[in-house]
Amino acid sequence: MAAPDRGKLSLFALTAMVIGSMVGAGIFNLPGRFATATGPFGAIIAWVIAGTGMYMLARVFQSLATRRPDIDSGVFAYAKAGFGDYMGFLSAFGYWLGSCLGNVFYWVLIGSTLGRFFPELFGDGSSPVAIIVSLLGIWAFHFMILRGVEQAAFINTVVTIAKIVPIVVAILLFVFFFNYTQFSENFFGGLNMPEKSLVAQVRDTMLITVFVFLGIEGASVYSRFAKKREDVGSATVLGFVAVTGLMVAVTLLPFATAPRADIAGVANPSLSGALELVVGHWGAVFISIGVLISVLGAYLAWSLICAEVMFAAAKSEDMPKMFAAQNSNGVPANALWLTNIVVSLFVISTYWSADAFNFMLDMTSVTALLPYLLVAGYGVIVARRGIGYGRDDGDRAMDQIIAWIAVIYTLFMFVAAGLKYVLLVAVLFVPGTLILYFWARRERNAKFFTPVELIVFGVTVLAGAAGAIGLLTGTITP
Image 1 (spheres, rainbow, N blue to C red):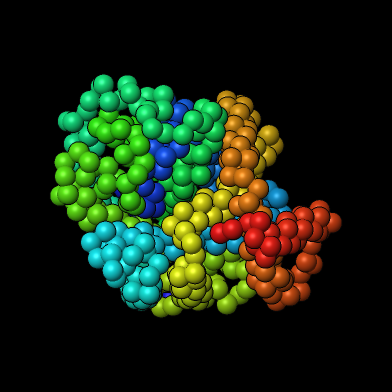
Image 2: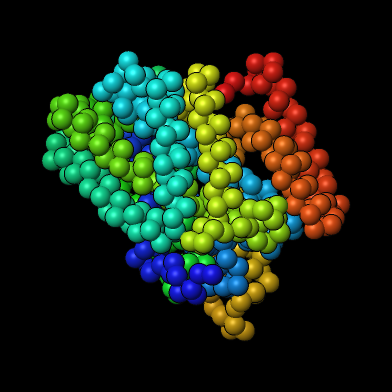
């Protein structure tokens, strides 16, 4: 039996979990993805929208950590508290599945990064050699994590510090080589780029902004390990502010060093290509090393989060009981085994994918939207009902406004994502419900659905059927 104080994380460690979760693969792909979509003007608008929306979501997490300190592993638990068992399950399953897809994306990026130097072996990250290396890495991390969350969290803190260095150096170099004339030329779109409306430009950046903000809830997921409950909200906001500053700089500064078309044309990870345009090949090598460190660190953080979400859902009777089991080191071993088996299967499937890199990135973003929407919705409920507030608490009205803004932002993200990805997510939700949700409910002799939940399930089945038909007929392509 683990001692009561084992695994307790400080504010610094929790903040490192947030930064470690957020600063992963996404930040290294911002220059190319944004340059393909828009120029600095559209990028600024996109970051204002995304930054405001995600800041409001971070504030909702902070408020809920204070108002509902009894709820641990908040992402899915908040959805269940506000909207019932089935929505809680969909939130937990969607968040867990999205985390698995994100981990697959990390290994594809590792392969594509190595492919810059060994193209005949690693290719675009989905070659047989890349897949074998990914599988070896997945299971090496698996057995390390089984040794204990304290060790893994310590390693994550060290890696988080180490991987920030290449990003900061790249930013300083971009500042040093800043060319105002080049920035002005790119500002409203640049030369040799297809004409698009400003709305279309901003919309095309939305999924990548969701992806790079994933992990904002890292401290909330690990709330049961916090030394002080109030540190959960503080770590969320501190991590958000630090990472947002880095991401905006990485996006905008390259526009002042090279034509937009050149930045859009570099290979992934595009930050290495963008820096190579400025300082030569050594810049690409330097950033590529940072990519490998960063992605491995982020993979560690997300492996922990994946297992923790499945474990917490099983503990609250929303997943089968077997995933609530812990080993002698306090690690949810069965949840970790399931996670890494699923990740391994998805990695193997990338061999047949035409564009595994961007498909996994976008799918990861969309699967996170439902949990985020339900958290924001629960924030509205808590503020409206005054749950956890004092009689004269002046924060209640402001918290409700913040939560409503987070709801609107998340709904906007669904629209920006497009119907294709919403239907593909539904395709995955249907078997998840039929297997894991039904299994958990049968174990506890619980009623499957309330009337409202049955309607939600029916809509999910119809959307999943539409997505499956689209895949079979070729109208939807991964």
